[in-house]
Length: 108
Ligand code: FES
Image (tube, rainbow, N blue to C red; front, side, top):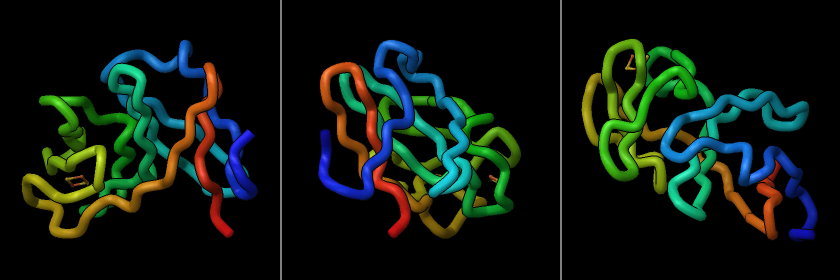
């Protein structure tokens, strides 16, 4: 079990490879999970441009998620903006994986 403030959000086996998945958490609100191989990345599920759900977007390249509304692109590892119209990055959440369990650090 990870340290405090992490909560289980998914089973690794249930996350499709390279497809954003939205999850509702009581503690964090809506988050977007992306599995790439044995890694999982988590960000807030609202584009920094106009809050469209990132879980409605798609992966367009290795580690590049594209917003489904206006096409902004972000690096899912860091949240960094790679393509306008977004100018601010996504807020990322820390992820830990233990066995088949995926945990995300919740808000303090
Ligand atoms: S809401 Fe995502 S690019 Fe506009």
